[in-house]
Amino acid sequence: MQTITVTKDDIGEDGNLSLDYLVKQRLPNQRVGLLKRLFGDEKIEITFDDEAKLKLKSLSQTNHEDIAELKLTGCKNLTRIESLSPKLKLLDANDCEALETLPKFPKTLETLRLVRCKKLAVLPKLPHQRLINLNIHGCESLTEIPKLPSTLHRFNISNCKSVTKIHNIPPYSGSIDLNGYESLLELPNFPQMLTRINLVGCKKLKTIPQLPRHLESLDLTGCDALEDSDHKLRNTEEYLRNLGCIIYLPTHLQSASISSIMGKFETIVMEYKKQHEEGAPFTRMLINRYIRDCAEPRGGTAEVTKEVSILLNILEKNPEHLEWVEKISSLYAMEGCINQPVAGFNLIMAWLDVSNTPELKDKVNAAKRVEALDSINVFISTELSDERGKREDSNFMKEVEVEAGNLLLIEVHARLLKDGIITKAWDAVPSSIAYAPTVTNFVTKERISKAYEAAKAILQNDNPKEVIDFLLQSPITGDDSIKNPEIFGIIAFGKDPEFQKIEMEFKQALNSLPVETDDFTAQVKKLESQRINNIKQFAEKKIGDLADLKIIKPIGSERLLDEKERVAVV
Image 1 (tube, rainbow, N blue to C red):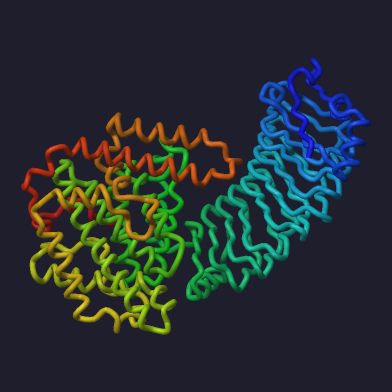
Image 2: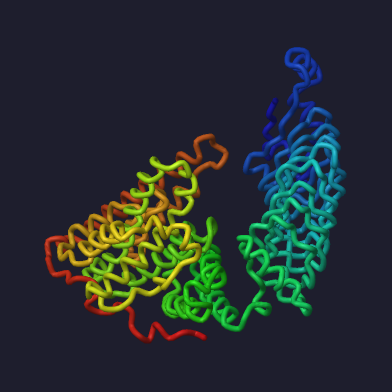
């Protein structure tokens, strides 16, 4: 592949560029002929330097047959492309914000990228011969998505808010993301192979087609016009939930209590987004699953919504807590049965005790609950690992680890209360769990006693150094990429200018990484590791002599959450 990089001097004063002329200037016919004789069907890639991207306004005579790739990303002032090479394989027009029209696509096209082409109103017919990669995102003026070819291997057609109609969804699609299609009026039939459907924010959509049988997730949040007078959708929801599908209905189709909870959460997220670009999708998913999935064994909908209300009342006072809550939620919201979100919610409530205490020494004391939870999870993981070596159903034992952990927590928590190790029940510890019979035989009296003694030792420990070591060294159980120092740092020092500087430097370094490099993932991990080390060093300096002060009392002697925080919203 021969690369031609366009400079500003190649473009006329009127902003027009003739690609045919440019190719002939850079690669004379004799040279092209020689290349073809030496290397076979040699093709040309067209790219633009930064100055040329800003100067370019139109492309004419772009039908040179040897142009295989045309990369226009960032040509913000480009309004028109006259024609395309008959043998073009790739067209990349990301961030061509002024682009208004496109010519007919050649049959040879394999990859098409149109991201944030904000003025593009009409899309030509898509080629159905070879197109395998399609990315149409954020094209705000686009009103219709043409028929999608069945050849597509990967496609994204999200956030096109003016689109009113989509002709079809390819038959072998595994997922469809129509997030932000505010003007969409109707949908084509869903292929039976679909497992994930995202229709968030489709405000004008009134009906949806019959849902696929093997659906794993369906998000209808913000579909405010969706009708269900015959309760068909809600009946289907119950059926799919029983099969393990994760479903989010729009507010007006939810029960009154759930609607109130989720409405309050969305208000908190709106406030949070005033200071943060991202929202809190994982927390939203975790809360929704925690309330709706298998609520009966945990006390019913009324009880679980009351528990969520405690969290929301605190988030309402300080939406900044969502930063660390979202990090934990990302580990527990999506995969597995309801016991996964239950475990995640428990961990969030434990860290909430830490965040709700004003003094640093009290935060360290409150973190004993987090350490106790971690000790239970580590214990159950070790025991299951030993058990798997003795049993033929080793895969099954691995799959029920979170169930065993939750059931063991219930038993240990009950004994801690009974023996006065803690004086009040911890929030979000259920009275029972879903699928308890699958692990009842594993959670024996002997294992309960061992886990209890470990948790008791942690909670009665008056040496803060050991707790501090846990906070600065141990990962949150379940994912080594998120460390306790990160969560504790955000909670304890989030408003400290020096801590904010660490976070800012990390984000700047992350944003400066070239995505196209082969070692991008390795570079990201290196930056994340460096960030965690910086946070640890900062936290150690801030804690200072606290580790030498044996003033920390056993947890449970007082309630960390004010009773006013416990008032439910429903």
